[in-house]
Amino acid sequence: MTVTADPDRPLVERTLAGEIEAFEDLVSRHRDVVYRVAARVVGREAAQDVSQDAFLRAFHKLPDFKGQSPFRSWLLRITHNTALNTLARRVPEPVGVSTDIESAHPAPPTERPPVDTIEEGERRRRLELKLGELRPEHRAVLVLRDLEELSYDEIADVTGTPLGSVKGRLHRARGEMIDILRHNTYDWDLPRG
Image (tube, rainbow, N blue to C red; front, side):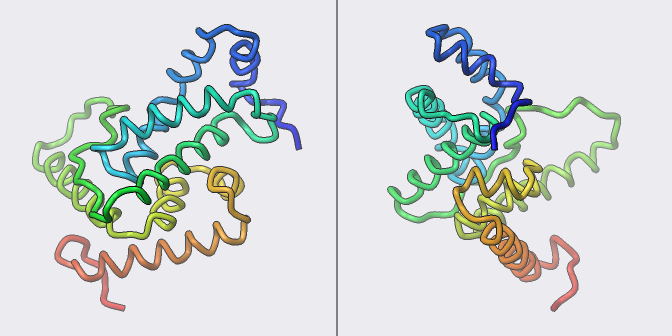
């Protein structure tokens, strides 16, 4: 199946024609999501390196891009694989705590009581810690589906796994996350299973 409505397709074609500025536009368009996915898989400390490596790989592999899926999905597949390769090369350790991975794309200011903002930030920090306890393949599908809101088909394309495997991993990831959170009910108020 060829995707004809890919908004990135003109930039890809211009890049392939030698227009480097078009690739810079692609980087600008996708930098935030690439960083967020990388940060949630490898941690904030290594996310910038993984992001740069993913964009460099995408640039060099761009002639192989067939357009059978959107450029964004193809780029996130490269990011996902680069992040997993980075994890495989290092000694296992928990993903670093991030006070705000969303800082690459900050939310607009709101008029909320300061205590709510502090509590939300603390919950976000604790959630990042708990997310780091998941296995990398589970963490990846959970991040792509529940945080980046990709469809199951897009996740299958990004991770290079069959659709059924994506659904199975996501189910196991959610179950694993619930178990992790249940062991810390003080933070999450979840009933014991």
